[in-house]
Picture 1 (tube, one colour):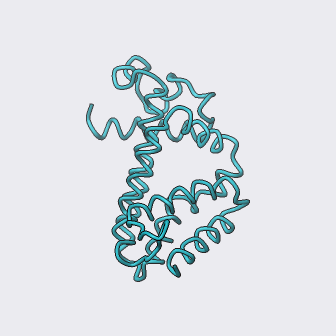
Picture 2 (cartoon, rainbow, N blue to C red):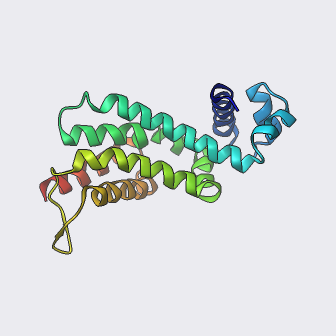
Length: 185
């Protein structure tokens, strides 16, 4: 399938998923939104779950691209990491809290697209690790943690913060506080 057509299908699918949630969307609605027939959609994707997984990857790749394009404009390590998480998690957080459909998308990601979600977080960690390398002296069990380990700790913590934060401002503050602790160590 051509990249443009695939992207068009996945962008349309994301719009439909964000509008109605995962469970209420059918392949027919995805096809209609993409401007193709249902049988045409099945030529490209075998199931709604497959479309969903691909859409999650496409969405995260778009976020990674945005982070990659904007991160060099930030001067400090803290600014770079905070920018990455602002794009990745904070910017759309209040929308997720207010929208039952967006919340369902998040929950469904864990259920139907766990591998895609994990792959997405690994891509984020691959951006963060070089930024942290050599600049953060943080130890785990009296042994210096690698920048890859620190990136993983940060992303895993932010995943948890998203479960407890009441709004984007609180999420941002939790991320800033954790980063402050890591940079002060």
